[in-house]
Length: 161
Image 1 (cartoon, one colour):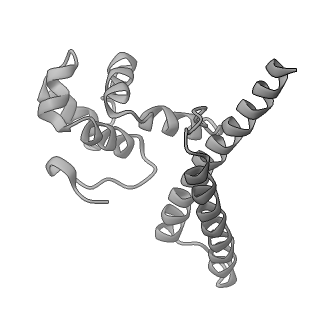
Image 2 (tube, rainbow, N blue to C red; image 1 turned 180 degrees about the horizontal axis):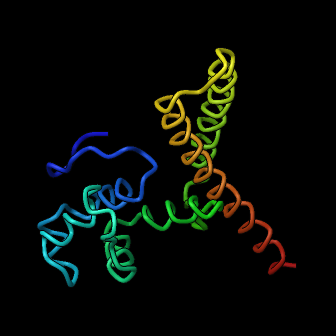
C-alpha cells in the first residue's frame, strides 16, 4: 500500500492499520481533523502502533467512514469478531456487475491455487497470508454486492406478482 499523507506503514490486518487507511481515505490528518471533533495530533495517535491503548472513538469512526464512503474500521472489527461485513448496495449497471463478478471469480480461483501452492511447502508465511486476506476481503465484498443484486430481483418479482 502506498504511504498516504506520510503515515507510517502498518501491518495489514491490524486495527491501527485499518484506522490509518480510514484517516487517509477520509482526506488525511489535516482534512480529517477539520471534519471531526479531535485535532490532527489526536488522529495521528489513533493510528500509531506505539500508542496501543489509544483507540479512535466510535463516533469519529462513523464520521470518517461516512466521509470516506467505505466502512474500513467497521469491516476490520467485524472480521476480528469472526464475521464478514457485506455491502447491501445494488449497482445500477448489471453489465458492470457481471464483469466484476466474473473477474472476482477468476481471482478467487487463483487465490485457491495460491493457497494450495503455499501449503505445499508446509506453511503459509505472513506475507502470503496478508496478500491472500486482502483478496478474500475483496471477494466477500463482490459476493455481497452480487447477493444484494439478486435479492433486489427477487423483491421486484414479489411486488409485481
